[in-house]
Length: 385
Image (cartoon, rainbow, N blue to C red):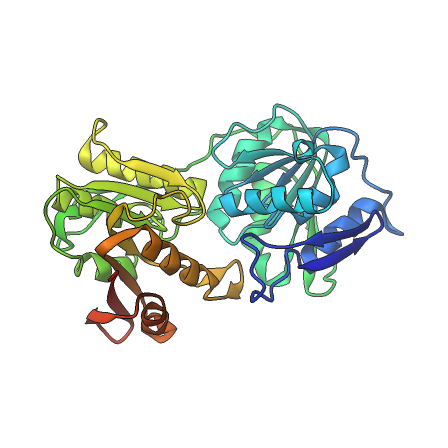
């Protein structure tokens, strides 16, 4: 846990789930830069926060916690960001009802007077969000974006310009930058172009030729990524009434393939991204029909899956947390999978060879075997004994 000091006081903040081994803070220089701008500078007066304030993409709730007295609406695609926000509000004696939490799938407010955007890693997610928010923005709305310099590109500014209005940037401070956008009510309000759909290639098992649906922000929106393709070619061949979990499901291709290959199985799709779970459900329905049964959970890994209830977990763990490379997510996923598996249940993992997941799996399960590998990827199997 670390302390963020602002003109409004100091705030104890942590990521979620809080991990003493995690050295990363719950905010960065981009959040600090935005908060200073709101307070007023030599060039600009303080921003009037008495109206409807919307905070988009607040990564760990730092902005929402500091601004809680203004009762902002927070919009995020991340379940973990919502949990971090609630924990940080409680940690600092703020009423959790002071911040209205909405997901990227929810209908945004009808009117926005101050729009604060933490620029996401995904340009597609930013595009979708701006299209969804634009109807609520008016000529007097203050629109400020923030991000680290490496996160803000010419394409980022063009999106603000095309969807909201004239856009300029600030000078860089501590490798962070602000985006100032002036709403233009004359701009046409067009619907978001998302989701995107594409057909899978042949030669990848039961899911060959099926349709994939990708909502904005999901990895590889236009084609099947090479890691998932490698995994699909080496999935276990099983039969019977298995309970299968597609953990970190993304667009749901892996879990859909498992369901098609074994019609007797029950598949649960889990991701911390609301957009991902919506994509997984759409992909599953496109492949198996509207009446096919499956579970779709937005959550913190396997936390909501009963212990000892799963036969097979399929997992392609992320190794980035925003811009930082970390193994914290894979550790949590592997430990959660072990708890959820029945005796004899299996975890199958695909990952870049250099990540060394075999070491983590041996530490967690006491065993790990290599199913398949190529110069870049490896598929690993661990059994709960």
